[in-house]
Length: 113
Image 1 (cartoon, helix red, strand yellow):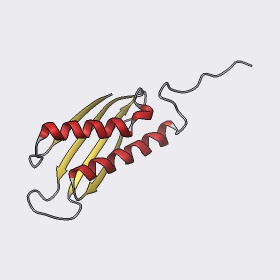
Image 2 (cartoon, one colour):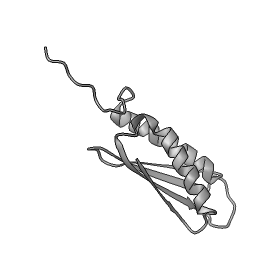
Image 3 (cartoon, helix red, strand yellow):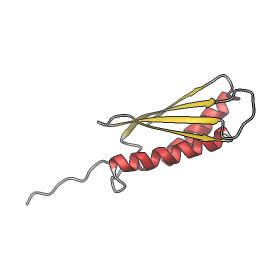
């Protein structure tokens, strides 16, 4: 699973942020990691330099084998919280599409009768 990070001009220390985002996404999507080819993460600050509640935005879009892309957005007070919230939402959305019981190997084989 490849994780691509895109940020606006307000993101600090891209290297540290990239490492953090990759770790959070990998942990949240462990169950379906073999069926996800790519996750695009877009981070932004809605108010720029101005402070404000829930003004950090994280949008994640997952490319899942043989499925339409699945996208979620989460707003929070900090980038880290926005990333955590979006990762949880994306994991739930993927569970909903693929099913909670689906293993990382894919659907179970049918037995002949």
